[in-house]
Amino acid sequence: MKRAIVIVIDSMGIGAMDDCSEFNDVPECNTLKNVCEYNGGLNVPNLSKMGLGNIQDFKGIAKCETPIAKYGTMLEKSKGKDTTTGHWEMMGLVSEKPFATFPNGFQSEIVEKFIEKTNCGGILANRPASGTAIIEELNEEHHKTGFPIVYTSADSVFQIAVDTDFIPLETLYKWCETARKILNDYNVSRVIARPYKIIDGKPTRISKDRRDYSMVPSHTVMNELEAAGLKVYGIGKIEDIFSKSGVTYAVHTGSNKEGLELTLDAVKNHADKSFIFTNLVDTDMLYGHRNDAKGYGKAIEEIDTYLDKIMNAMSDEDLLIITADHGCDPTVEGTDHTREKVPVLIYSKTSQGGDLGTIVGFDYVAKKIKEYLQ
Image (tube, rainbow, N blue to C red; front, side, top):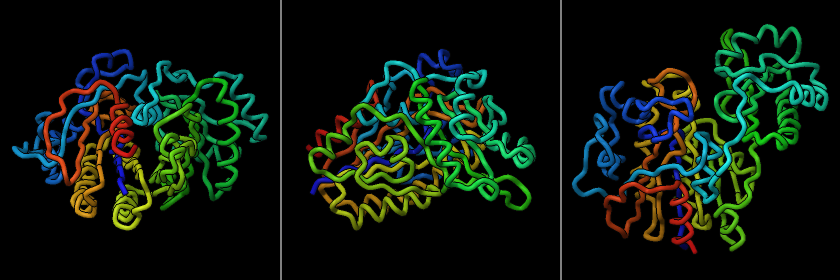
């Protein structure tokens, strides 16, 4: 059976798009290049072998005369720089209209509906903020009032943070489900549950319990595969990004390592899964948004250590695509996503490597999957 495997290295952009200023980004944005420079180069022999270093001059990523994969650069068609927009376009759905953002916080109409329908009593924050900073700042008040911490970012997100030793995780999820229903009328891309606990005296986010509640996509290649009787396996936050639409089986992960282990296991042991779709979020969530270029580099190196195992486990009937969904340059000012081009690497055991050049549209990935599997 033919299988397609897509691994998204979340936020590993490779240079500012021409329209980056429209998204409040600077031309110097280049997540991978700047992470490589900051770390004095990266040790990624498998990505190098696949041709990543042939796309641009990335410090420490060697160019390869005979790459084993096809390599290129993809430009985003959609009007956005967030997870939902990038993944949806990857699966064939181009977003012509940008999702709503809230640089001054959510309007009173939204807040009042949320408080009324959840009966939470009130909210804290209601402004753009760093998730790690806002829980440290407002944790004490959260415990005094019992109100959830509600905040946003430069992206179209309504994020709800609570200490789940104080307010049950199930309550947080219910509040997010309520918010999702309200925000469907306001073109908000995602509601995100941001659970945390006090660990060693410090508010600490619990990644494995995070959940994303996205708008439901109208139609993607995943729906076509499902309708054709093929099995779609989502690893990481894939199920959340697509609101389960087109996903026949899914598992959430608490780390990149877990996502990589599950991907390797799926390739080795699940011949019945026609499409394996993995999101590796640590690069973005733990390092990009926290301006941690060193941690970002180590996360890429960790991913690389699994790629040869995954490729070796593939059959001659398997196709592997590695790409990203946007940028989140930890070396430039701010903690938000950056509007960037992304790399694409396409490998199979039966085809030769080569230069794909510049491709307009992340939906190139959907076309390749559909062409290969159908």
